[in-house]
Image (cartoon, rainbow, N blue to C red; front, side):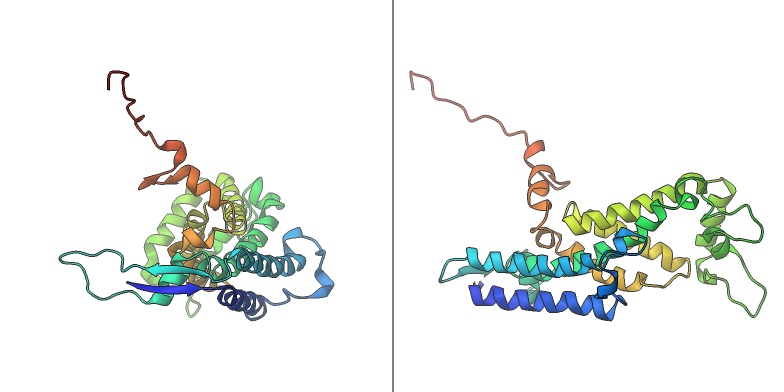
Amino acid sequence: MRSVRITQSVVYMVTALAVALGVFLNIALANGKFSLSNLWGEHYYAENTLWTYLSIVFVAAIGYLTARQLPADGVTLKLSKGVTGEGESTVDDVPAAKLVFGSRYVGGILLRPISLFVGLSWVAAGEHKIRDAAWMSNGYALVNPDPKVQGFWERIAAIPEPPARPAIAADFGWYRDFINYMINHGWETWFGKVIALGEFAIGLGLIFGCLLGVAAFFGIMLNLNFMLAGTASTNPILLVLSVPLIIGYKVASFYGLDRWVLNALGTPWSPGQLFRHEEPMPTASPAD
């Protein structure tokens, strides 16, 4: 069994990489996220670039405090092989992957800027919808009664005249049928609220590290739906970034509320403290 020594210098190095990753994500994948002219936002609070700076500071702070709490000689992490036995693969996993997806000293710090970036993106996407009656009241953002203005569902379900291409590819005709089913049954009046509040809730879950794995899963589901609808935008990027968050959900949210929430609630395959029904230990009688 391999082992790795985690020292303060190692954690400081991981923290520097995490900060650099956060800066890269906000520069390369999000235009204007470091603009000083929009520190307080112009219209929507979620668009304030102040959150970008705070997220970077937060990552640096958790890395610094984690390093300070380590013993002077560090700690030793044993990299177990995982499932073993007859019939199982004899090929071991990559040690770096074990650290990223299983160690709070590495993955807990390195995955945090990703969850913050994706979370802030979802909050920004959901906040402006929550403020819009077309999403939260009448559903006009999805199906608009004005024949001159098409809603989102109407646009993606339409089949234009050639040579124009429909938003939904021909291979996904079943998805167009599903959209038309929702249009014909008037689902836009309540589904708009589901989309707006769902995006906002996903973002909060990723930012605060509360049920982070669940939030990342539903974020991927929304990304897939938007991509099936022919809307690329940032959806492919957010989907790819959410994959490591699901794989490493235990450590990605360690520096968040899941540190306590997961211990209390547990998972479907491992109940938490609130759902454990442990039999009391028998007590010895005086005669014993």
